[in-house]
Image (cartoon, rainbow, N blue to C red):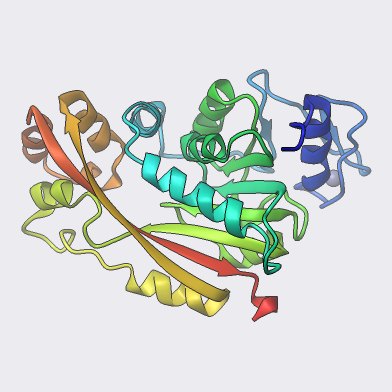
Length: 297
Ligand SMILES: [Zn+2]
């Protein structure tokens, strides 16, 4: 196994993949912890350790309560542990496209990382390695929480449509249960890189969906359009399915409701009926869409 990178080496690598969100210039890495481009645009590192590389103020509707619930579900209840394990295996085995060659490391970027728990879980599964994690999200609250809990990654507040990353800088791009920007993904993905997008399957959180929206069109869900669009943008596309159930206790059911957009528009009485169950089996049903850069097509 290779020696893990030192923190100075990590910082240098991180700075080399970022770009100035104003002019696109490279940052000078000689004056850490702050970033300055040749045009003089400067960005301070927040005291929690993240960078805010947005060029205009943003107001997200995702709040601290939601991210705390999400973090509890992902990190403590380990509801997505099988997903993290599966993605780590994909990265370890297929992170490069050259036949017969194992991936040895590189940059793993989570586009729309929220509070960072998925990226953290996946990197933990990868074990000590040369994979560097970088999470991008427009929510400052999410990024702040990520950098507080997972100090060894790099966390950046940014619009996904204008990600402050160099062209072809990511060996692995993740987009987990979060909106995509394929033009930008193609720009950032290295020619030998892999994009892993995760979307819900028809039975994802089916118990919650049925109880809250059993009598409306929100009950049914199909990812067919998303899969078709993905196939149009990327090459060598594979679709993998992951489905399992986990029993959640009362506190966990409350966290599940807090983190699920599905529940935000539901009647309060139905939400209470769901969370007042002592425990319930919950279905995780996901499709993993794997794609390569279209230039390889
Ligand atoms: Zn600049």
